[in-house]
Length: 208
Length: 156
Image (cartoon, rainbow over all chains, first blue to last red):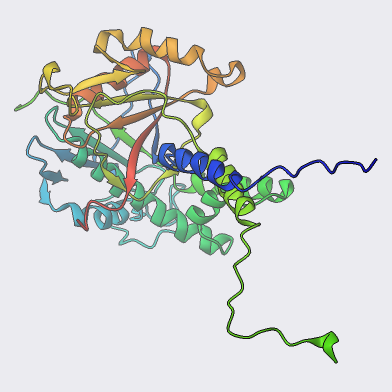
């Protein structure tokens, strides 16, 4: 007796089923793209010791409830903020020879502005009615100022840009572990050279 | 020489579709892998501010706080900006409990490294954000990230 050939399964509709599933996943997919400005909050400590910061080392940014900027007692547009912050941090006003002298600063070295990037503190003060949009824009510009200087210094020291290298590490583009470690050390050096010193005062009550 | 008979010209051969399922399956697997099903339904309006000095969010160690005006379909909750944690509205005084609940859902080894992701609508007042930040300081959750959309506020 001849063996009966088992009938072929008809796979013609497989494509249809796959399409159906594909369309379902296409519709439900939201590709994760969350990115943002990272910040570290100061820990809550009772009776904080008063730290005295010299007036010249303080860069005060005030935002009122109409989203207007007052930088160092002067009205300023948002687009000028980045440059003003760079000039302030990079000033290097300490006289040469003193321990605070900044040997890499390229600023004006004005004695009325910050001594060195380590001493320079940017203080942001918001009104409670400032819009969040403006708040983020100000933060973004100030971080951009720091990133600009860090890029400059890391290019001078190591020949690559701080922000690019940090991004590469964050995204896991560099796999060699020894290399990652050495780069992270260098990133830390640049961070120590130009520390991000952003202080946020508790916002005033609206209108005051 | 009939062995090498010329094919009849003029007839278009049918396209072989046997590999079509393979291609579709490939796409299917790609989307299955990248898909994240939305875990909490948004009750608030979310138009995030723009920023370009950004870092990537580590999703496995973050808890989300949403804030903004009640979104479309939730107008009955008023026009004032509200805070949403998980899938319900929360009061400022209630943030602690809601966050603690969310934190317990994370992997135990990451619970100490929690990062709080703030997704706040751009029309919200900063005062609300400050209140949230004060609560976070009380909770000792000091790592924080303001989620933004790519772009720059300056070149609108």
